[in-house]
Image 1: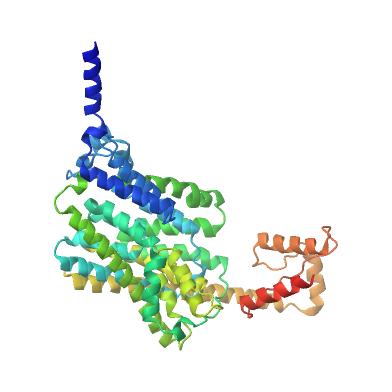
Image 2 (image 1 turned 120 degrees about the horizontal axis):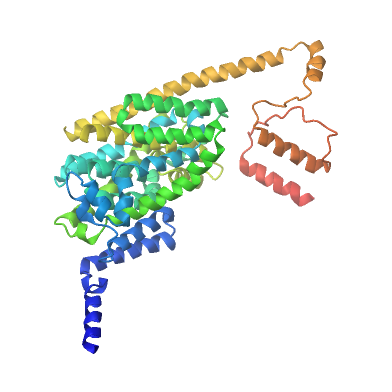
Length: 395
Length: 118
């Protein structure tokens, strides 16, 4: 009887996670804990980083059976096998793989976004366009390394859009094998916007330019705000049909907000729905960074390069936005403050807040926030269009 | 496709799409604002001898049609609180936005000075 007891304990021990844990598992668990620390103690994008890092932790606890990377490496995907043998996170990951979560997040973001500053000063859309050079410039750099395929390079480049859902959406279509590191890099850099952007902004502008006080924006009527999502949605989708999921949901959410007749839908989109989808998205994206995945040859080097190129994408996007802002400063006869150009890299509203902060350092009586919100929301539209271009050409 | 060509195509498409949006916003904003201006002119062009008649006809007078009703309620409530009287002895006939030309820090400083005198 004693032997039976000992054998049972031995069997249990052999089947436990402790017996199956590897060094790579431990490293990834340490990284997950580090990201949890950043999210909780430093408050770096906690709404996303907490579920992402916890998903990473769950996926790296051996034999948990929550996520099976091998089910996702088969081409074409065997959805029957995923439904029958997949764990909880495999099932939730279907929402990422099928491109459902990012457009739903865009629905919520649309319901939270006020396009008033953009409608009042439509020229600020150009700053949102210029900042997208970060995406395409990084594409050239990623291709130049010779390590990545065009699809992988496109997915890495989209980090420069500073838009997490867009990065996840495009990567799930073009290079799903890189989803974990790309999502982590995108959200980490978004959280680091206040650290990354100011030195670039200060280096590229003079004190005189930073001190420019911009004219107060005109009030925008309700009708103009209602027309905006309908016009933009129709126009952009007609130009670039591949951007339809993101732009369509983004503008629908905004119409919920501006129409004023669907208060309950608006409330759901900007609160309950976006929170639920964020939990699913964060957990499943984090769970793709598992030891099984990272043990594949060459993946570590790719992940390191993604982190480096992602940073370059952010810097190039910021610089392009500021330089275009300088151009507008020159052509407007000094009426545009070039600092609002850096807000063109999406990251709403963090990038606009950085423009405000740097502007106020130069001139304490300057209020650039509303002026920077225009290029900031234009950046979201611009990065969705850029993602549509990359998907059309590389997909 | 060559990466440089893709970059050029991508930037061209992004700029064209956003430029088209700018154009559309400019057109419909002009139309909407033009229409609003016409409506205002029509309101102003009411003959003086008809004004009294018009006001008495519109007992449910709305001070400013373009003001959000919730904002209107808040301003009216603030006036009522200031007057320490919530009955209907007075009527809000018009609400005008005061031009905000003074820097916000000056306003803050002035308010602080005023409140220090109470």
